[in-house]
Each structure stands twice: as structure tokens, then as C-alpha cells.
Length: 478
Image (cartoon, rainbow, N blue to C red; front, side):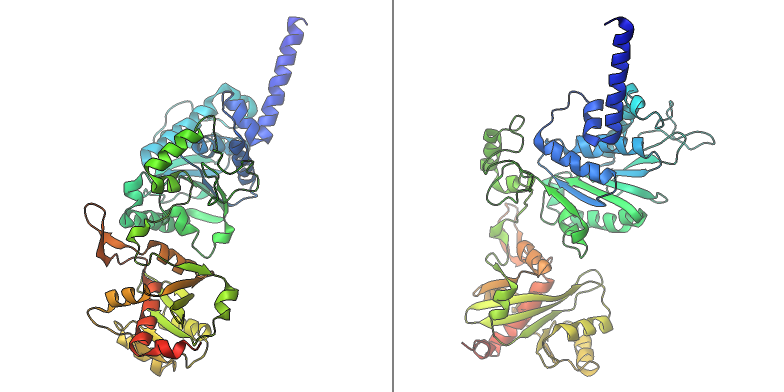
């Protein structure tokens, strides 16, 4: 083959590779990063990201262990690929710190600046100069934002908690919103992340916007955990890949592993993973298995079980209800309770925030078995109780209010076997997270943390009232 033919063959091969890179995210990654170490789980993630890039998935979560390649695909290669095919897209990349978000921004710029990228996407280019302030006829390019020359698309980076005022978002990517175990363990920090997500991030989206959340799980109440407890959780596609496939792990349909095998054995072998697991089982369950669980020794209600609807319905005890009113930022909770011998069965009926009295009363009337059913309510709000009685004709009674009512009620419930209805997702979350305060050494104290307790308080009102009134014998028919 002469030199001209060789050059033509090389040129033709390059064009074929460029065309493949335009059509396939997997081919794009290998095209722009020939040294990429491709494992089966990367291919699985690439397929999901392909669907996301083409709009077939609008909300995607990706959970993977540390150092298993999620950020390279989701936060570096994917934005470059999307802007190549759709240079008009407005993308925002967020992480726990602005510096990490900026580093992703710079990496995306380097990918787009590469001559090999230009061969695949010649219409997507950046300003050759660093431009910090918008000026007529120029396109921004700095560590916070870059704009696609000749188009309306851009990529903007921001730390979780940062401002997005005036920024419309077509695609929002959140990569590791939590820095470490200290932040994840702080209720204040978790609340701050949630407030930013709901009050800043979500307000910049429109009907066709897409969201990608990718993280290593740190805590059951982290950002992803809270999102998946919302009413629209079914709208999310979740790809969760544990480091070791075990009996507790929920295997993906396309996971080729046998039980006991590592996710990426060539890079993070089973011996290394098991060593970490032995050193810190709780952290391993969260960080590597993507299944964060609370420390059982500090739980207020350490022993409980989930019961099916069929099993719950088969319990023919009289119904009683507990009601916790909640406040502006905490939920009102109406809990249905059955007591049978030494078993307590509880079911979530209402669990919502910011409810007016009229809405709450209607939810109660539609949720209880009959207008005459007994409801034991939080005695801290006698005006609301009186209102429910007089205006709505509900059989509402005040919960016992003594100085020992909380420890008494908790101790009482823990003498029973507790069963929670399978549909009661918020109650299940509370049971998993209602904890005692800890001393400096991490040992549980006797005082509960006033979080994740609204539904359980409602159940406590009902059970305490019935037992104190001798109702346990009345309810236990059999």
C-alpha cells in the first residue's frame, strides 16, 4: 500500500471512529480516552447515560462505591458528549464543594479542546481566551462557566449551597453532594443540602429538564435517600451497584456476578474489600454496598418488622388512631394502630407537611375507619383538638401529658412486638432513624433526638392511652 492510500485509509478510519463517537456514548468515551479501563459495570452505566443523553430517562440516580469510575463518566465525559450533539443545552454541574465542581468544569473544557473531539463535533467549540465577564460578541470561559461559541448552550459549575439565580437548567448533574461521614452524620447539614435542592436547584428546572444524581451513599437520610421517600420516587431510574454481591444486595438484572464476587475485581479485589468490611462494617455497608443503615444500638425502637397488607388486614382488632399535628416544616401524622396480645400493628394514614386545618380534617375523615373512631392527639395543641371535635365532629381525645409520658410511651412500645404496614414508607424511615442522643464516646443516652419521630409519636399517643385506660384487654379479642 502506497503512502497516499495509507493516509486515505487512516483518514477513513478516523472518520468512522468519529461518527461512532457521535452516535454512541460508549464509543465516545473510548474515542476521547483510549486508555479507559472498561469493566462490565461501566458498560451498564454507559447504556443508562446513553438513554439519559437522548432523553429517554429524565431522572437518573447512580450509586457506586468509591473509585469505581462513576464521576469520569457522569461528570466529565457525559457533559462533553451532550454538548457535542446538542450544543444548545444548558448544563449545571454541582458537588459538595465549589472547587470540586470547578475541577469537573475544567476537565470538560479539556475534553472539548482536544483536537480529536473537534473531529467528532466541529460545531462545539469554546472561546480560545479566558473570559470572566460577559462582553458583547464574546463567550464566557472560566472555571465557573463556559459557553459554546455560536450557540446558546453552556456548562456552569456550582457547589451545593451555591446560588443559581438567573440560571435556567436543561440538565442538572449532582455529583457527591456530601463530602464525608462528618457532614453525612449531621442533621443540620443534611437539612441544608435538602433546602438547597428544593429551594435553589429545583426552582431552576422546567418541564423538560433532566436530573442526574450520582453519589456514594453515606447515610440513609442523605439527599438521594430523601428524594426516594417523596411521592414522585417512581419517576426515578436507579442504578445501584454494590461492591460485593451478597444476599442483602439487590442485584441488577444485568449484573453477571455470582454471590460473593467483587464489582471490579481487577481494580478493587475481594480481599481488599473484605478487609475494609472487617475494619468498619457499618461504613462498608453504606459506602461500598450502597445500603446505609443506622447503628442499631442507638435506635429508640431497635426491633420491628414489616408486614404485608394481607397480614395486616387479617388482624381483626379494633382500630385506634394517633395524631401528631406537626408544624410548618414538620409533617402532620395520622397513624392507625391495632393491638393484639403482645403485638402492635401500625399503618401510616396521613404524613404530610404544611397542612391547613380544613385539609387535615378532610384527610382524617377519609382515612379513618369511621367518624366515631377514637383519635388520640397531641395535647400540646388543645385549640386544634377542640376545632376537630366541634366543627368536624371527630372523636378526638387528648394524649396523656405527664412529665414521664415520652419515656413511658417508648418503654411501653418496646415491650411489644412492633409490625409496620409495608406501604408506610415514612414510618419505616422513622423506625430506621429515630435515635437516642450520644455522649462524647458515641454511647447512647436516654434522651431521644427530636427528629424522625412524628409518626412514632402519634403511635405512642394511641398505645399509651389504650394501655393506661385498660384498653389493651379490650382490643385483644382473641
